[in-house]
Image (cartoon, rainbow, N blue to C red; front, side, top):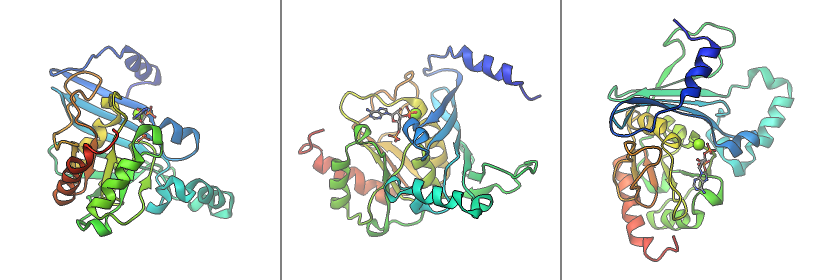
Length: 267
Ligand SMILES: Nc1ncnc2c1ncn2[C@@H]1O[C@H](COP(=O)(O)O)[C@@H](OP(=O)(O)O)[C@H]1O
Ligand SMILES: [Mg+2]
């Protein structure tokens, strides 16, 4: 039986899990990419179920995911394009927003439109399976990274991109929509190198990790180790940064490039 609004709110307010290696709990980031949200750009509603320290279910609601991948890019003026389109008579046909989800071990990740134009949604309806990109040539690959300079080192990733042979400009996107973009095959790589001392939170990654893995991709820290969701609210022991790739070949190249350039970086 579905829960009422007040029952859902009551359940959310309990929020008493401290995480850890045992047990089952939900991780919710109600607005991931707060800056993207307030700027009318990309943001995500991210939900994951963690069982015995492993994310087993991931759901990403991406209300502003655009029709064209290029419009994800903050610097391409997505907001301006969007406002021009929505102010014109095309508003009704503007098709944006999706929900992406996956269950661990199923080998499948799914995407469906966020809005069903009044139709009752009976799964699978218009849900379709998504897979990561098959591009493994760095010259053809696109990498994503946070928009905010404060959240990652753009100069370090520019150096990595150069040494690996990535030629495309980075796709700078707010929030876990970056994970969604890779799961959908709209980009091949995500890199995030936060400043020393910043501790990544489990709710900023858990849903994305399940979705990427089930869509055929790889998520590790910069040492090539899986992210650890069993030590409470932080990704404890994270080695330098987070690397998400559509496949093992690109992933290996990035990890090697990080090792080669880390000591001479100022991070
Ligand atoms: N100084 C910092 N370095 C790295 N990440 C940070 C940060 N400050 C905040 N963040 C995290 O980065 C998330 C946004 O991701 P991105 O930079 O990829 O758009 C924020 O999620 P919220 O917006 O939910 O707080 C926040 O958890
Ligand atoms: Mg967040």
